[in-house]
Amino acid sequence: MEAMTDVLETEFRAAMRHVASPVAVVTTYAGDEPHGSTVSAFMSLSMQPPMLLVSLDNRSTLLAMLSVGSPLGVNILASGQSDVAALFATRGADRFAALPWSLRDGAPALDDTHAWVATRVGSLVPAGDHTLVLADVIGAAHDTREPLIYHQKAYGTHLPY
View 1 (cartoon, helix red, strand yellow):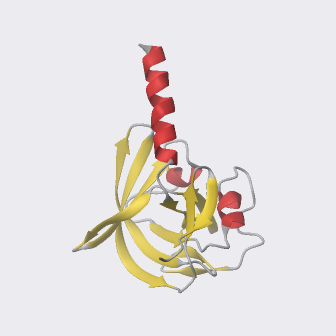
View 2 (view 1 turned 180 degrees about the vertical axis):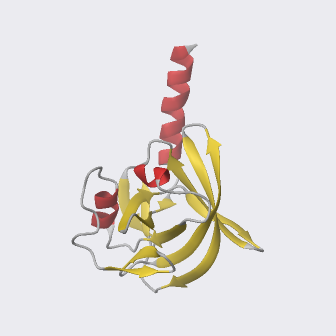
View 3 (view 1 turned 90 degrees about the vertical axis):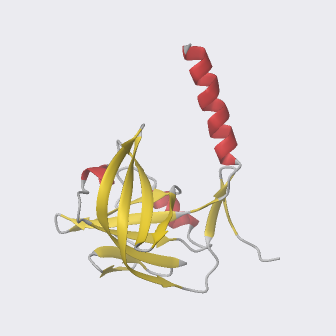
């Protein structure tokens, strides 16, 4: 049975690599410090009321800092920000030291992103080895920069037809 589970996990990972995903850095401000992590699993959840869903690994240090009501920023990265994505995916890195950012709606907002969504955590839902963060949108902004996309273990961007 374990071999079947390993095969399924391998095949599922391979299938999901074929899905192009936007890349975001999710941030919060806790203990008088900014915190953040790169994610590709996020989506709009509802327009009435405006809600967003973010999936965080249960081992995530960012997740450990969140509770209902916590500020949560979703920095949707622009095409030239693959280095930012890599930085926020690296454990132990001083992620905010060399980057321009500001505190917006209670959460760190990175400069020069494709889009920004400010939220408050509405609920945390356990889901396998991840936790779904259901967040209430309190603000949003966007820019004309092209989005950063992750596909087949590589960063790229969307090209219009």
